[in-house]
Image (tube, rainbow, N blue to C red; front, side):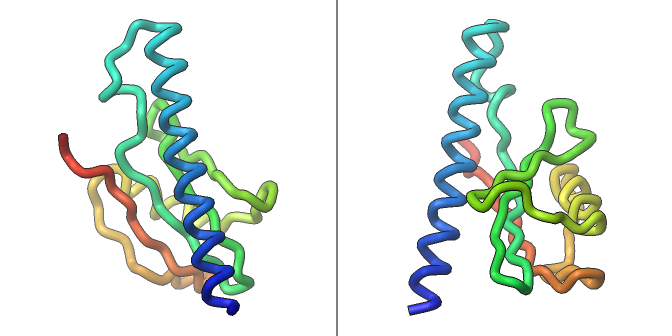
Length: 113
């Protein structure tokens, strides 16, 4: 039962991240006339903390920071996880478990089109 709830929560979070990407894409295209490929994030890091909290980090538009998406409000995020997410967005590999907070991290990447 707990795994089903956790799976549903993760699915909702991923759907939220994809919806955010679509909204960013639509807003970027309508306001700046930019191409779709340059507006939507192509990578995200799914974080599952030890307390059961799950959230998604996506790169900021300048690529130098992260934006955190969560269905439970504003989660307390680990600075090491943030730094590693930025590394992942720049093509570096990251450990699947944070050595500082113990969170599980999964890199999500949109397939090439």
